Amino acid sequence: MERTLFDTDHRLFAESYQKFLAEHVRPFHDTWERQGVVDREVWREAGRLGFLGTEVPEEFGGGGIDDFRFNVVVNEESVRSGCTGLGFALHNDVVLPYLLRYGSAEQQRRWLPGMVSGELITAIAMTEPGAGSDLLGITTRAVRDGDDWILNGTKMFITNGINADLVIVVAQTDPAKAGRGFSLFAVERGMAGFERGRALDKIGQPAQDTAELFFTDVRVPADNLIGREGMAFAYLMQNLPRERLSIAVGAVAAMENSLDTTIDYVRGRSAFGKPLGELQNVRFTLADLSTSATLARLFVDRCVESLNAATLSARDAAMVKMWTTEEVVRVVDRCLQLHGGYGYMREYPIAKAYLDTRVLTIYGGTTEVMKEFIGRSLGLNHTI
Image (cartoon, rainbow, N blue to C red; front, side, top):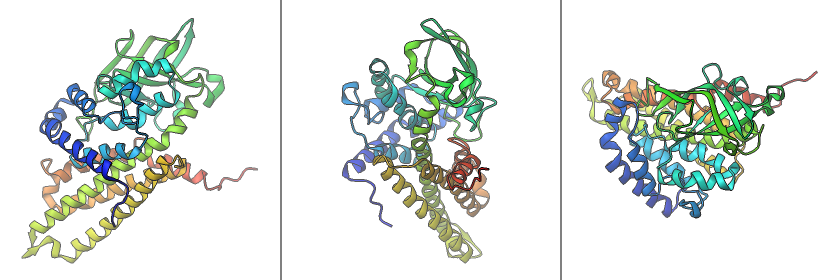
């Protein structure tokens, strides 16, 4: 089906971003995968070319365009190019809204220009060694001490954790208030007691710096509280739909890219005296996978339109995240199978996709948590 999501401005933006990837990312991505982190210079180049913070007001150096479709372009083209080490999606789609929506004027003045230029790389620290999708299990604690907060705790699996200059940390500030006892703090590089571990050794996306972060009596100025005290969960719930949609965008791009790669492969590979693509089982498999990818594309694009119109519901975001990430795992697995032994070789793009996409069902809320959330929204619980 013809895709109608983008207009001329988005297509020109995509062409520019493709050129950026070809010149500044793809030639170096293998090296970054070996070293477990991308060079900071690529962030500055992305900022110089206008690929970071397109929705940031012009007064802070951004594009001043509140249109998530530009974010979609960055996410999709990065995935299609195999450039999964870039942490731009987290920076643009996840962290930025917290400062735009809840940051004070002074905080925006301090941090937004650097986020746009690529000089200031961001992360958000929710997950802990003992608390993943269950955010109520967070034990990182912040205690008020005069004009500061004293922060203690450990965060795990933090994307952009090595390169990050500014980390938004979710911490418990009042244990007696349960869900209303958590707050957001901006922790800056160089604060005493803030340390990071090594880049974690993952099975996929090796160039994406993911780290464990340690906070030991970190003195965070009260001015670094994001929004209001005790409102972290409310803020997280307001922003999670966008984060989950961002993950779904990447999932569908990976589906489509893997299918394109596989179709090219079966056209040129022969078995039993004929091209693989002429075998009925291969055609049937690809017909099934292509249908799934088309449905996923329609679902995601509709959700993008809803997000732009400020009508994307939390349930729809959970649905699109759950379904597309489970489907991409299935689609890539079947595509790898059609490659035979070559699909198991890391030098083939399908092997990289197999490793890089597996995490999508986990972060942003696991599939099981998405199902629980969706199930509760159906009114099935019986209260006595």
